[in-house]
Image (cartoon, rainbow, N blue to C red):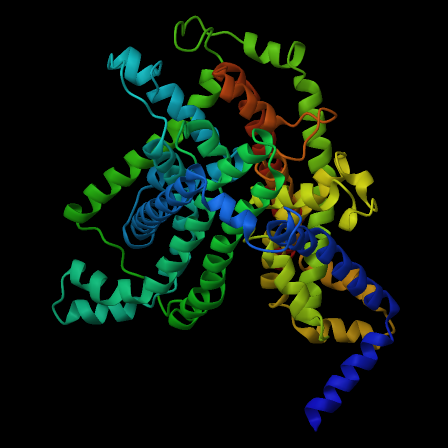
Length: 569
């Protein structure tokens, strides 16, 4: 009885606030139109693309040897990269949390965790080719090896592992910090060695989180387009096969069916990760550690682990440093000295670099505040409001996290090239900058929403209720009370959206037209042609832009953020 009365009261409050109702309706329309609709069109095309309803397209696609091979290749790469990334990430996290390190090693770890965030997704592929390819600086000129090839399976595995293991490291570091050290110390007091304590106490507590890290990396790996495209060679994955099916074979129906297969794989993995492993992790590791952990200072353990992790971190940093250095060589593979800036000049004088950076910067700059604001609104509705469509809004906004960029790109082509349901309505956005902005928003929305939900759950509802009691409507409460309290999350979401947008490639490479030149597409184009110095010059400037954005965010949060004001109080 009390529950039904409470629901009735919430409904009356909702209907009495037209701004809130309008916001919910517009939000549901946006999510349905630009997330659910493209995916639904893919399903429809997969079953009726040949004119009759049935599994004909899937049968045709599965008879293609290239497609079945691509599925096997994708799953093989995904599993190996997921396992390697989780294990290396666990080692880095264990060393940081359990071993007493000096500041230099700690600094290396911080750099490694930040580099994948501020760099384009295919930078390590460029570095791998330039260092270890047939004309590589290390293989050809230092070791005099001429018959090696970094292209193919192992090239993709190494590059993706180096790209994604910092994600696992950051996830597992937080979990290890939440393990109560008294559990491990009790085992030590009973005579167990360090390895037995780790195997019998720490690892079982960490297994759900380790599985979670594996699945996150697995999803990222099989959805990755840029690295397999550059360093894959003839080793095709599902993402590159879908791209080639549209651009090479002009088979949109076949590409739609392939995209549905890839989407099904990622959705299954995402569901397991989201609704099973995340819940088990939260149930296993609750709260913070009761007291400080006694760090390992035994040299027989400390020195080998520190040396290995430091060497791995330095290697990753070297791979990233290789990109700006490669942009200074006169002719890559033949002449390395004297260093020159001619490639940077050519970027802006001959290869339309100014337009590429302007288009990318402007589109990302427009998309990022929209994404940040939408994320905060969705977070506010999910955490602070009760209405029937709340679950729908949360689920659909998070769905974009599980949709590979290539799949989304194919969905937008099929969904909007002829207008909404091929009626011509909204056809005008296809091929314009607006559709690119929408893709940027959709791709970055889940990250900002998760951050906003975490921040809002820490705010007592009585703060907002007092504003309502004084006569403020929902819009005024959100803008003057809620948003200032989650300012740090908003700024973080803003910059994250900007960085993700300006470095995106998989979702937009199928949608970009000659009217717009995007930096990532230019880098991919020059890398495919073998013009590595030009690709490095573009990538270097892009890294400077993204790193500057992150530094600005940190500056604003430090000097104007909520955390600073709380410290002062």
